[in-house]
Length: 242
Image 1 (tube, rainbow, N blue to C red):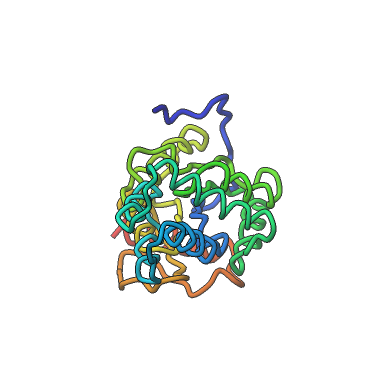
Image 2: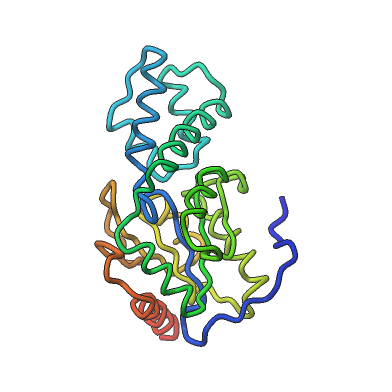
């Protein structure tokens, strides 16, 4: 599994402490969790089983392979690949009809693009859904996308964010983890980003997160700016220099 970027051309981000922003998708850019939960419930019920809200909560932010295993335990007699394909297909179909944007996400992405800060999507979803969401945003919003099928171990393991950082470091000279912000909404997501050593911003949505002094927490992205993200990076750099 290669982490290299085909036909890579170096990016010269705007001067300043903030070098890049890595974005989770489900729950952070788009409010697709209700779509996922309904797809899970429909799938389990189609085989005579039950799927509770508690069962659904255990899936939030996890790798799709992990979630497929939980659905198998709930009585779905399909392979992991078949389960993932069914869920992805249903969620993507709903996104094509209506994209449920999270407040402030598109505005912040647009400002980062205007100021020359590269953004990367790091999602446990697969390419078909990621492409559908990206297609609803201006071309070039993301420098590239890391999807769940590109890693051996999904969130909460650090591999997804480490892969994103490694690929981006081929494009951005002298990329440093204390100058890269990862934005997440779920516990597996923030755990992955923190374990990869990135400046981690939690914007909890579907489920509350346990306290963690090692990350930053915002209630929403609405009204937030690139300057606010720069402040987080400056604070991290100041702490590291003490």
